[in-house]
Amino acid sequence: MKAMILAAGRGQRMMPLTESTPKPMLQVNGQPLLTYHINRLKLAGISDIVINLAWCGEVIEQYYGDGSEFGVKVTYCYEPAGGLETAGGIINALPLLTESEEAFIVVNGDVFTDYDVAALTQLQLYAGEAHIVLVENPEHNLDGDFCLTNQIINTQKYTFSGIGLYTRDFFSPLSVGVLPLGPLLRRNIETGRVSTELYLGLWSDIGTPQRLMEINKNQEQNSVG
Image (cartoon, rainbow, N blue to C red; front, side, top):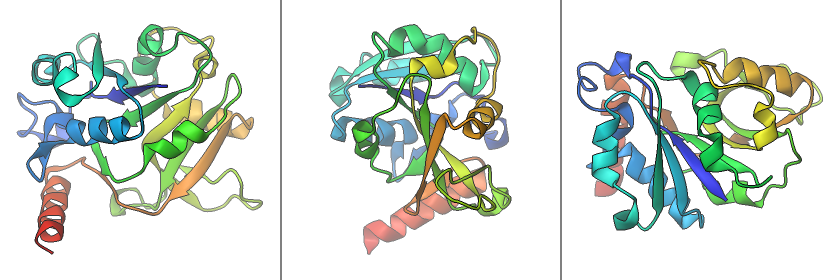
């Protein structure tokens, strides 16, 4: 199985920290966010990783190279200035991600989590399906994004973690272009092509300097403890 780490975003809300640094290269406890994701994928037995790049993408490519120093194989997929949004970036990278009907994992590069992606490697999806991981709603997204698909009464919405398992046909017949993932997931949840799970462990969206500072403080305290 292959995996993709989304790392093409501009990170405007993280300025000035992202003035010359991609957001996934910001550090938690002295280590770039991207490194945490690469290590978790490697522990799950996934060594073939695609990273999409746009804003300051050369910083990421120079740091990780071909991935051999980190025990993985890294392939890069460049996007135009401004990026292609999440779904657009995945569609652009499909030739690198799928050589067969096998599903692939996608992880947002700007989240910090201890979710065990090995669980996703055990799922069996049919062509045209996807599976996404939801988390409890943080303060900045109290209304949530999606309901759990296995609930009889779907009223409570949870936040999309940025972690999912997808088949190539889930993105058919869409073409490369600027395209967000949220509306695509919503449409396919309604038609039963997307399943969900709720993860209650560590997860944080590193969307502002304040959140980055808080997660660093928490990790420092945990290390001391």
